[in-house]
Length: 290
Image (cartoon, rainbow, N blue to C red; front, side):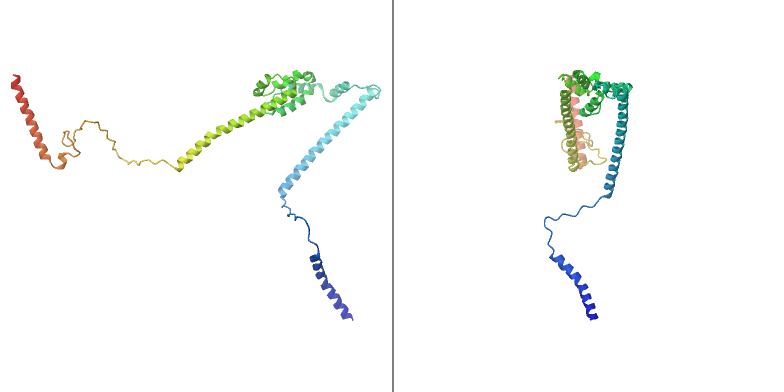
């Protein structure tokens, strides 16, 4: 009986993996699209992003800490001011009075003077129109007596623009800063587009010359080879004029001289006959003249 129990236990253990395989085969297949495996993780990029996130968090915490400290200082100052000057809120505090007192405490006069000087000397420079307007509006808070008049504020904004933009906007005489800002942005966009088109047109001739140079390099012009040491020059013949033969010293037709072809005796005889004839002719002329 004990052996039967042991055999039953062994067979039961052997049947367990079979039942697991059968259960996996009978399990329903997953429905829907099969998602691709996730891409491999670039740990260098991951660590770089993590460091940037930690730095941003540190800057944010520092800014929040500074804000909380400033707010705590302001709360202490305001509570003290209410007790000493406004009799624990028994006296109503006007907004203008609060702004004046706040600036006197946290925005001293020397800082206001410095910001006002920066506003008066502010120019666009290399900034865009929107960047220039943002700094202009921020500095205007420290010089309200300058920007109270909208026309004066607009004129100061226009005079700080680039000369190319300023000359175009002065002719329109805008009365509000919003109109001036819109016109300046539009003019800036048109000028950038013109500069890009002009730059592209200047590049085209250079590209054409490069293509021509490539064609010349591929198809070079064939030139006649010139023999080294050749002193032969092209002969220029004048019509009706015969040159003196370098062999016989006379002018004769034909391309060959008789002195070269072996008829030297005939040439000598003919020359002697011609000399005798000319001598006789001169003798006959002398008696006639006498």
